[in-house]
Amino acid sequence: MKNFAGAPGTWTGLILRMAQCLFSVGSIASMATTKTFFNFTAFCYLIASMGLLLVWSFGLAVMDVYALSKKKVLHNSILLGLFAVGDWVTATLSLAAAASSAGITVLYFGDLGGCNLGEECTKYQMAVALAFLSWITVAISSLIMFWLVAAG
Amino acid sequence: MKNFAGAPGTWTGLILRMAQCLFSVGSIASMATTKTFFNFTAFCYLIASMGLLLVWSFGLAVMDVYALSKKKVLHNSILLGLFAVGDWVTATLSLAAAASSAGITVLYFGDLGGCNLGEECTKYQMAVALAFLSWITVAISSLIMFWLVAAG
Image 1 (cartoon, rainbow over the protein chains, first blue to last red):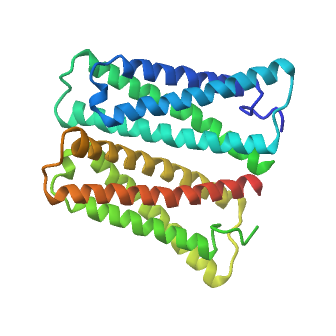
Image 2 (cartoon, rainbow over the protein chains, first blue to last red; image 1 turned 45 degrees about the vertical axis):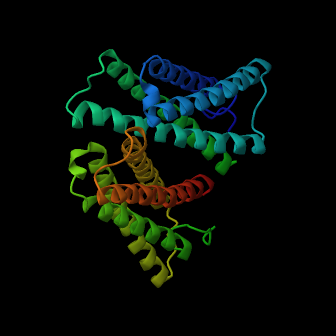
C-alpha cells in the first residue's frame, strides 16, 4: 500500500499538491488583481477558499518533501484520517467557491448579454477556470486519502 | 458489514434516499414555480441537477424497499461500485448547482442591495436552501458507499 499513487510521501502525491498550490495561486492572483472583485461576495469567498487550499496544500507538500528526502512512510492512521478530512473539506469549499463564482460569471457573460468591465472579465473567467482545476486536483487527493483510510 | 448504517438495503439507507427525494422535489417545485428562473442559467442548471438527483435517489429508494421486503442483501461489489460512482457524481453536481445558485442569490440580495422581484425572492432562497440540504444527504450516502467499496 505504501507505493499507492498519490499517497502522502510519494512523488505523485507531491505533484498533486504542487498542482493544487499552483492553480490556487493562479486563481487568487487573477482574481485579486481585478479592481471590482470586492463588490461580489462570491468572488471574495473564492479568494478566501483558494487561500485556505493554498495553505493546506503547501503544508502537505512540505511534509511530502520531508518524507521523500528522509525516506519516511507517512502511513500513521490518525495522520491519514486527518488528511482525508482536511482534503474533503477543502475540496468541498473550493468546489462551492468555483461554482458560485462561475454562476456569477455566466450571469454577466451570458444572461445579461455580455460583460462590460473590459479586461476584468477575462481575469474573472481565468480565476474561475483555475479554481475548477484546483478543485479537480484536490478532489483526486481527497478520494485517494479516503480510500487509504477505508482500506487501511 | 451488512448492517452498516446507510448501506443499500437498510432502513437508514432508505431514509437517506427518501430525504434526498424530498429535498430535491422541494427545490425543483420552489424554483420551477417562479416566473423568471429561465433568465438565469444557474437556476435552470439547479432544476436539471435536482431532477437528476431525484431520478437517481428514487431508483435507489425503490431498490432499498425491494431489498428490505425480500430481505435480500445488496452487497455485490460491482453494484456497490456503481452506487459509489453515481452518488459521488450526483453529490458533486448538486453541490455545484446549489453553490452557483447561492452565488446569484447572494448577489441579488446582498451585493446589489436587495431583491426587487417580490415573492420570487423567497422562492429562490428556499430552492437554494433545499438544494444544499439535498446535497448534504447525498454527500453522506456517497461517503458511506465509498467506504463500503474501499473496505469491502
